Image 1 (cartoon, rainbow, N blue to C red):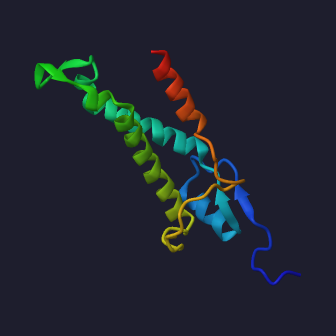
Image 2: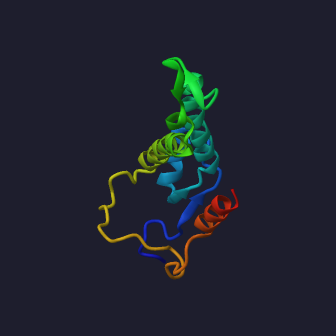
Amino acid sequence: DSSLTHPLFLVMHGGSGSTDEEIQTAVKAGVVKMNIDTDTQWSYWDGLRGFEKEKRDYLQGQIGNPTGADKPNKKFYDPRVWVRKAEEAMVVRVMTSCEKLNSAGTYEPSNEPGSPQLGQPLKTPSPVVLMAAGALAGS
């Protein structure tokens, strides 16, 4: 005897590839979370793939592209550029799921500074920073 409409917090495992109708049926049945890992992986890859296709002529070497044999290509093969395109594609996919789950626009953005979900903030540099520093020192 619960006062809640749906006393269980249901999770839809394997939500990737589900039809809109299946998702709406699940939401009406009380699903509050949908796992979409496969879809987010694909969207990330697809964003990268689209960037490579669009910029292919600029990704064949460090120097030389359609604008000139001596023109540099660093701003095209820089991982910060193509990773960003992959991330942007994944954001679009996540927002699609938020819309399908009727949760888009239901939360106020927070002005609170970011914090870790678990534990305390790191007081040392991240392992990625340490690895990068080691790679630079070794080169």
